[in-house]
Structure formats: structure tokens, C-alpha cells
Length: 130
Image (cartoon, rainbow, N blue to C red):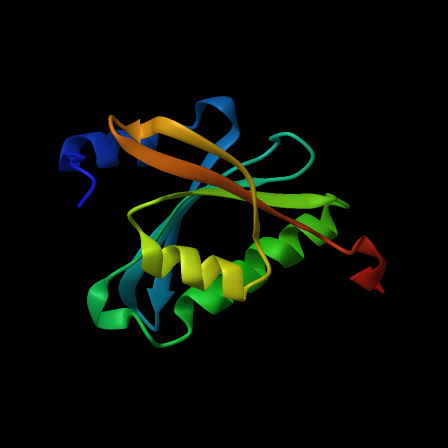
């Protein structure tokens, strides 16, 4: 889909530099997906990668991950949460838009040549902490 080799993905999950933290997403005892979060990043954490395996999609796992992502930001008194989504990934665009993310900037050739990507963010209401 993105032309990223398996060894590149493995390397990304092992690289903890710059604040990247990899997470396994489990459904019971089964691996259902993975996520990478970078924190600190701008005025809140950045969801570098969120992937749910096809057989676990449409089971609200992505919703749960985003809920966890926001609650962690709120717990750390962060004002924003961020992610990047490519222009060709319309399903992810719909998913993130439905969860309140707005495009903050669009950049051509960010993920790959001739493919635009959008930086999206969402304000986190830290008053909900109580």
C-alpha cells in the first residue's frame, strides 16, 4: 500500500530515538495491530503509526486506541494530539475526521513522491481531567 518494506517497519518499531514509543495492540491474547507514539512533539503527542490487522478492523479497536491516546494526553496536561494521514488513505481520513481531527497542514511528497499527506490535530480539553 505505501511501498514500505517489512524490515523498514521492524526498524521503526525498534527505534526509540526522538521519543518514539511502540505499542502492541492486543485483542485478548492475539496481536490485533500496533501503534507508535512520539511524545513530546509540538504541543502534544503525535500518533506516528496506527495499524489494525484486517481481521480485527470494524471492531472498534481503532476507537479504543484513539480514546487511550487522548486520555494519555489529557493525563499529561497536553493541549493537542497530532497525526499524519496520506491523501490516498481515504478510509483513515474518514475515521480521524469522525473522531474530531482537523487538517492543520497539507504537504506534498511527505510520505512518498507524488502523494500528499495531511497533518491533522485535535484540541484536548484538559478541563475534563476531573
